[in-house]
Image 1 (cartoon, rainbow, N blue to C red):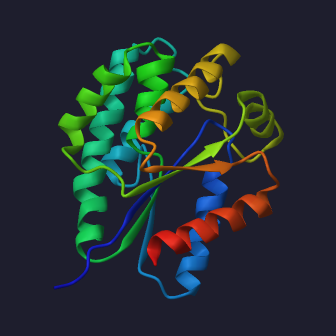
Image 2 (cartoon, rainbow, N blue to C red; image 1 turned 180 degrees about the vertical axis):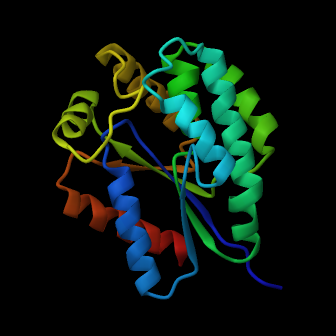
Image 3 (cartoon, rainbow, N blue to C red; image 1 turned 45 degrees about the vertical axis):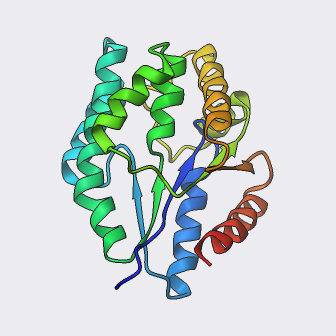
Length: 210
């Protein structure tokens, strides 16, 4: 019987550097001949990318918090059944930029919908398909937002442009989520230089895959 792949998610506040690092890790794994798939949320497949365009569009400032949470869950469901699950069944290791923990921190805690309430929505969407491991990129909101401001190539989306208190609430929400799922979530010091963060993540990924 073919061995199933491992599902690893990357989480963190905006500007934590996880998207840059996950791309580097993916490239190195490919060079070593590993069976690996890189994807992201919301997005990763056609329908979910369309939902992403709506969620992150700066023009939709009036979006209700519950609408936002439901759209994330809908995108997650389609992405999971269309891309993630088939890849894992085929023996590919999946690296995903964001997953359920983002919804718990952003919509559950920062939007004040309740972590358990948002968890319930997402359990309906994904069933019992939780990540095998999650890497949390820990960086203070001020540092992350300063990085975004300096990065001219990164388009600022609707969530980036929230007030600083929202980003503090997101960070606080992640601490709650990290404690709840401490057996699954590994901590990464994302305040270090990018090269150091990449090496630390690389060692952790190698341990997980081996």
